[in-house]
Image (cartoon, rainbow, N blue to C red):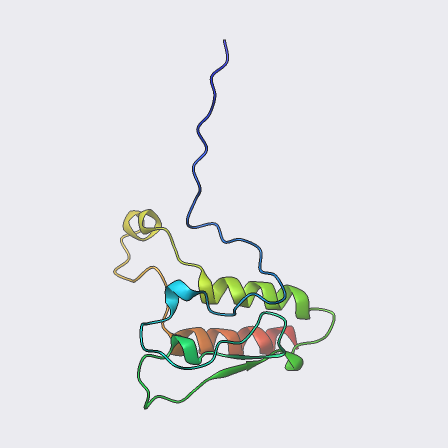
Length: 119
């Protein structure tokens, strides 16, 4: 006897981005944020949509600084870093007191290190 498995959509698995996909998914942009959102295929990505304080510096990611041979892979990993989040069970099971995702400054610092590693 076989049973049908019910497959539910997993909100923690991101869809693959298209060239015209926004760099920052709408769910992460606060209401009232007016910074323009870059497209996945752009060479320079603005992190402005993640910035809630209009007095903060606007950070950008220049993908042209990444070696061309690695650019498409790095682009995808950075997009997942920006839009993904850890499962609450992952945080809870490990006893972390963290949030399920980093803030824009922490993301920027991580991206800078990854870009240096890629070069």
